[in-house]
Length: 260
Image (cartoon, rainbow, N blue to C red; front, side):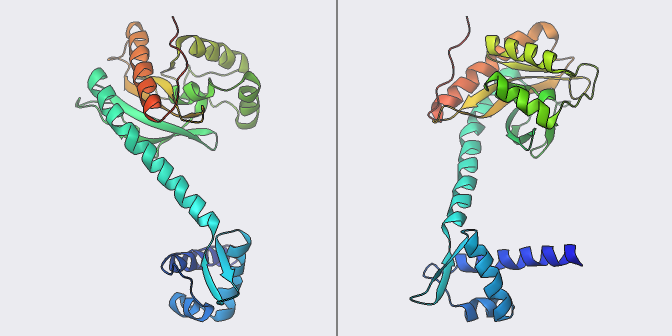
């Protein structure tokens, strides 16, 4: 009952927030309660909670409720991600055409890499990690490419907090192995996943930088190991690094100098 009640309260609060969005000049409590199908006392309690969190605000002069500034902040964040994906898509297509393999865009979330966009290879048999798919950071080329831009102490703290998750015999298993891999990534400017998450799959990845000088995500090429042999991984890594640099410039970022 407690769990059900909590979910119901969230649904009701979101309903009120959606209703507020339809009244730019604000709306009175009685109208909001009627539209939401709630008792005025229940609607007032939920609106007060939203107000404390900044998602609603009350205008005492007109006795009206309206959307709060935090709702705007959340909306802007969504728009920013949508803009990132929109900006990245032509570069993913170009990377797909250059490599003839699947190109991906990923970001870090809750200690994992999540694929947020993808342009699939035209090959009949191809590597696919559908948008929304997740992987442990240190088992992912995109994850390692992003983390390699951090200071050593931040990487160590991340490992201590989230741990390592070896799933194949190629996965990294110790902090020493991680830091050795990070050193290589920094020297090359790109990262690999050499069958570290799924047997028979490899990828090459590079970080993407935004206007604030921070790594906002990474792009990668993923392929069957039979089509991306170890001997060809360096060439693929350089190609991904080049496209990631161009995408960074488009977003106002400045990627680090290309290693000699």
